[in-house]
Each structure stands twice: as structure tokens, then as C-alpha cells.
Length: 156
Image (cartoon, rainbow, N blue to C red; front, top):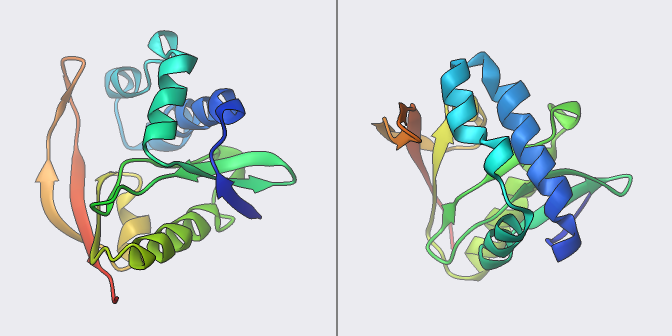
């Protein structure tokens, strides 16, 4: 597995990972209307997706040259996205991405990582030392979702 910075050419593959992770992996924890509101595959624009990934300093994990997952961490320690392609699930991709993000955050002097984890992602983050600081019920496209604000202190 290799972790590298996101490149513009990664837009289609990372968008595909995002949509499949929601519609396949997360579908066990969310209702169909929630999955549709969250994933919105027919509304996603590759150019907007690419701009967002570039602005968030996204990194990708590749296995055999194929994008297996992606994530990001802001200067404040916020992890906006952590998604793994379903076919690469439970192979250490998310753990490797998180380790990479932690190293970057510590190097940048960030003392805490935090995220809004889905029901599906919550156990992963808990295994890596994150704790729930709040249960959230945001509205996405008119549909109420459930996620968890989670945080983990870092040792600088």
C-alpha cells in the first residue's frame, strides 16, 4: 500500500470510492433516503469534487496502483472525509490513512484530531482512540442523518 498526495487525475476514482462506500458499506446503518441524500451520485460534479479534494489536502491510499481509499486533515485537525472502497475494506487502508494523517497533524503542531463520524465509521475511530463528544442529527437534503462528533488528543 502506498499513501500519496491526491492528484487531479484521482477525481473520478475517489468520487467512485466515496459513492460506493456510502451506497454499499454504510447502507447497513442508514435508510435508503439517507443514503440517497448523502451520496447524491447524480448530482456530483467531478470538477467541484476535484476542487474540494485539492483544497482539503486530500491523500489517497493505493494498492497495486488502484485507489483503495482517501482522507484529509485540515490545519485545525478536522478529518472531513475518510472513505475506503468496499472491496478493500478490512485490509488496513483506513488505519494506514489515519496514521498518515496523525503524523502530518503532529508535524504541523496540531494537538487534537476530530471528525463527524458516521454510524459505520464510529467503531473504527473508537478503536483508534477517538471518543464521542456529541451525537449529531444534521439535515442533509431535507433528510435527518445521525453522526458523531469524535475527537482524539495527540501527543506533540
